[in-house]
Every structure is written in structure tokens, then in C-alpha cells.
Length: 318
Ligand code: CP3
Image 1 (cartoon, protein in one colour):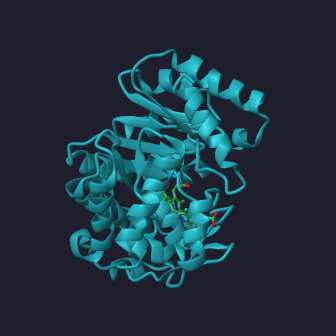
Image 2 (cartoon, helix red, strand yellow):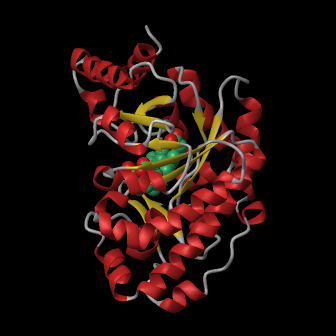
């Protein structure tokens, strides 16, 4: 994830002329950015260049990205009526530009490089919709969750349906795997995950699975409730570095594939220390089939591209 981004000179160059939303809205540019990491890093798969928050535009929530401040949602959700009046999003028309980017990227990629489509999970999307942007405490999100659970479940149910339809539309357009990002779900207690989130993630993943391509369920900070998180569905469990890969794999069931889990900050370490961490992950995977080597979260903007390339080469046996 965040395979493309500010750490890449060719991405920064495009960003001098276009905002992040411009890049997302212009299928030719989005497809071009999708290919950048494949060419520069030699990775085995491409992830579509888009953003999990794009569906907020047809939902009428008002999305913008302020330089250096992250996303801003103008019409944040706080009341039952805000949820009731959310329109039903039709991805084929309302997010047609994303699907066009999928088609163009798929056509431009080498045949042996699969394209991954993605969406935000109901909880992570809801947290942005309620907070109006990024947060460290999730105060508004949890207040609504505890104070007005009916509104909460109505919102997450609507988001689960949207995400399911959006992911299957991406698969129809040519995405060969789908990833559901529950980036911030680790802020919840295990009990609250089970009560307030799990049923909705399960629904989103079940709908996505109807597309007939592998589905990756990614979260960070999920170690405390990994069995429930894995139990929500998907073919691949995406974990971060806060849990050893072998432990995560054992706890999630070894019939499932696993993705992870290098700390993105390891790419800022001296080469020897970084490579030791990469080797440790490979040793924990033990050469068994079903391990997708990845970072546990997105590449940090401060990262040197050469360090990322070195990790790809090491994983490839170089
Ligand atoms: O190459 C890729 O990985 C594909 C592109 C991608 C982006 N966003 C582009 C982007 C993907 C997979 C995402 C997912 C995304 N977006 C997530 C889930 C994954 C994760 O990292 O947890 C989340 C939570 C978002 C929401 C979002 N988008 C935030 C919080 C920000 C601001 C981040 C910052 O550091 O400023 C964005 C903007 C964004 N989306 C960037 C990129 C490359 C930042 C770079 C820029 O401004 O050009």
C-alpha cells in the first residue's frame, strides 16, 4: 500500500502539476502512477492509484486534501439524518473514473503483474466521515458508536454495501485481487471490534468475495483480536509489524494466506539492520506457500527509493 507516493521522485514531479485528487480523477494519470512502482521497484504486483476516501464525493461528504494536513471532509457525519440521507452510490457511474483507471492500468501492465484494486473498510471509512479528517484519538467516532449505536450500525451497514459494490466493480474492470483497508481498526478493544465492526466487515468481505478474485483483509494493530479480524473473511490476512508473522499466521489459521509485515521505518535503518528484519520475516514465513511479502503499512515519505528497491531484491533472493 502507498507503493506510489511522495518518496518517489517521478511521483513528486507529477504532483508539482496536479493535486492528489486531480491524479485520482484523471484515469490516464492514475494509471501512469500505478505503473511507477512496478517500473522503479520491480515489485510483483501493482496497486491501483486511487484513495479510500474517493467514495465520499458521490456520498456528498465533500472531500479535499490540504497540503501537509491530510484529508478534510467538509460535511462530516454527526446525526442520524446525516446517515439517512446518504445516497446509494453506483460505482459504475459515480466512480466511473476509478474503473477507467483500472482498465487503463490493466492494459498497460505486463501480463505477469497482477493489479490490486482496493477500498476502505466500513470502520476506517466511518472514522474519516465522522471525524472530518485524520485523528489520533477517534473521540467523535467512538462517541457516536457508544451513544447512538443505531446510527452507527446504519452508517456501517451502508458503507459495507457501498464497499462491496465498489470492489466487485473494480474486479469487473480488471482488478485481479482486492484489498480492504481497515487501517485504524486497532484503536478498538477486542470486544468493541466484535460488537461494532466485525458484522459489517464480514458483509463487505462476503460481497467482495462474490467477484471471484482473491480478497486481502488488511488492518494495523489487530494483534489483540486477530482471530476475530481473520474470521471476518477474505483469502489473505494483512498484518503489521506489531505481531511476529509466524504468530499471526498460526493464530489466523494456516489455510489462509498472509501478507506482511515489515515496519516501514525499517527502510530508514542502516542496510544491515534493515536486511536483518527482512530475513527474519522470510524465516518466519518458512518458505511456505501463501506468504505475500509486504510492509506492515505504507511507505513513509522520507524513505529512500533505493532502500525499497534493495528490499524487493533481497526478497527476490538477490
Ligand atoms: O500506491 C498505492 O499504494 C496506491 C495509492 C493509495 C493512496 N491512498 C494514494 C494516496 C492507497 C492504497 C491509499 C489508501 C489510503 N488512503 C488509506 C489506507 C491505507 C493506509 O495507508 O492506511 C488511507 C487511510 C487513506 C487516506 C489518506 N489519503 C490519508 C490519511 C492521506 C494523507 C496522508 C499524508 O501523509 O498526507 C491520503 C493522501 C494520499 N493518498 C497520498 C497518497 C499517495 C499522499 C500523497 C500526496 O499528497 O500526494
